[in-house]
Length: 87
Image 1 (cartoon, rainbow, N blue to C red):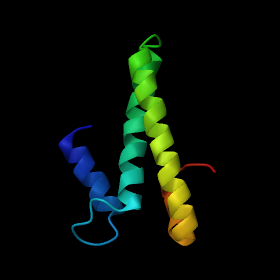
Image 2: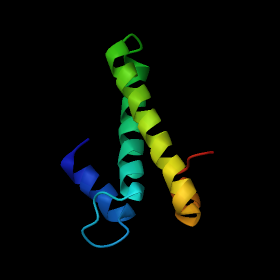
Image 3: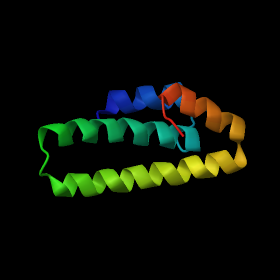
Image 4: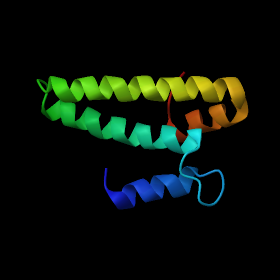
């Protein structure tokens, strides 16, 4: 993920100014990385090392979504809608 793209994602999903570590931002960054890896694996289907990394990213995002659902349900629903995730 390029630096400019990551900064744009952080700016779009930040809860307040200077926010880089909130669950919303982390989920958005993970989602963009997951989409990039998915495209990579479509071109290179035998790349099992990247597939393992993709599974790890999906599990990490799942845990963050579960936490956000448990603590701030309204933000959870909003981020699902903004990222186009289904749950």
